[in-house]
Image 1 (cartoon, rainbow, N blue to C red):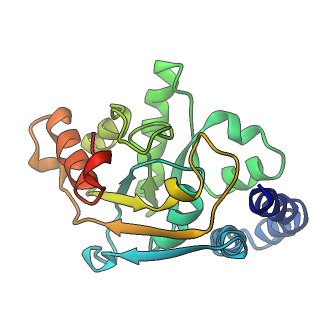
Image 2: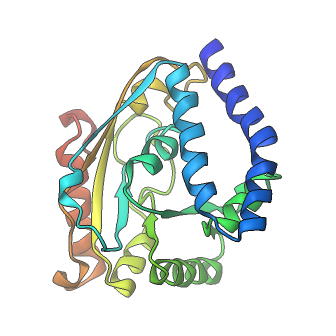
Length: 235
């Protein structure tokens, strides 16, 4: 419990104190690289302070200069701060539109070209896919959780179709990612955070153009993610 409060307080104070300064520097320099460089490191420091370490495997599968769609499993609120610093290069992410209403953080996310998603509105969801494609055309990777929400028991949830529309429409290679350890440290059903090691496993990229339809691509990505999970959490 104390670890959770400490980490959230550290993050909150960082947003309130460092956030306005970062926004000012970004505005003056007209360069969002400061946001991309500083923000993930603040997130990572907060986790290290409470005993959560991160290991990364499989980065050698990624080719420099290519834009990827990264698709990980989602079992904890630790997943984004674990993943974003682990991904080489600038990365956008599909984020629930409600998060953009948070002062300072919402402004920073807009300037960093993160993409809001309204899952309750089909037309808005289609526009989110189009917005994500435009961001990728500017050279940013895209991070999207195909389950759409955190699992409550560590097992893979059914995948949403939207991320695979994005993959098929953009033609960008999909990199399945298996995240291990975050569920044990901070599951959806528990407020108290426990120290541990989060492991990020990058699998080999999958070319969406090699698949006849969205469903077969979805199955291939799910298979890859599940391959590195414990057997009891694959379904």
